Image 1 (tube, helix red, strand yellow):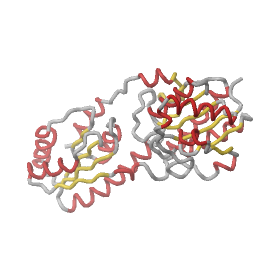
Image 2 (cartoon, helix red, strand yellow):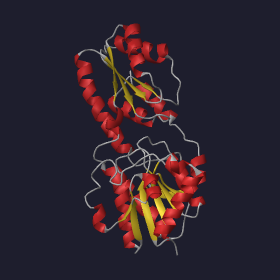
Image 3 (cartoon, one colour):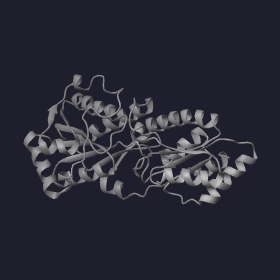
Image 4 (cartoon, helix red, strand yellow):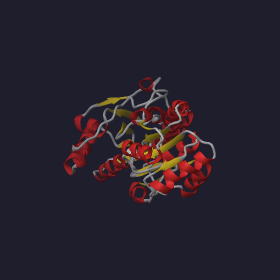
Length: 322
């Protein structure tokens, strides 16, 4: 038999759908007759003992809200061996045998370290960037995509009215998935992502001239955050083409908002699976979505997997975008 008393925390950047995952963890644990605790502000909460026992009603009416009801924070202290040992000792003192960690790669490394100190941990992927290699989908991604699409649709209205070019930066420091999928959805003329080097003349200026020759008079260029220099790029485009060009950085608006149905359902499935693993005695696992099936991997195996960028979809985007 596995853990009889567990905790749940959210760590790293917040993502819409985290609350649905927390709700699923709490209610699944209670349905298995397990005690369940909510840890406030990520690993900091474990270190400081900022933990509260949860009931069915503790997670009422949180699923439809963005962010995380447990809050989140970075924890430099937990990144030390002493900090991990202190957190494990706190867990033992409170009778916590397992922890569900909802977050990204950094959060999973922390979970693996905590496992090394004898506390069973299960990771649940929650990050808008969709940048965790072991899973096809991360909680928050769909909501972020829809938010970015809606914002760019609004930007397009004014871009079209003034015959402008708009360079729009979306989130994605190491991963271009938000940029690529949003770009297709809004009919952007060009997409710049960290995974694919670009040539300014060939991929932007020449494409704009080709589009002009077909009668196009306004342009949207979507840039992933990891490519950077968005304002400089806009100025360079205006100088090279003579077309008025504006830069917009969408920023943290992409993190917020009510999660979509997909994020709520996937988060609920993942949260349930995480509790089931702990109930059955598993540890050091990451929950993942493959196709439409919930699976799980060893944390170290998951962290070592190379992330694969969809180059075929990128080529399709380029062909559709003139």
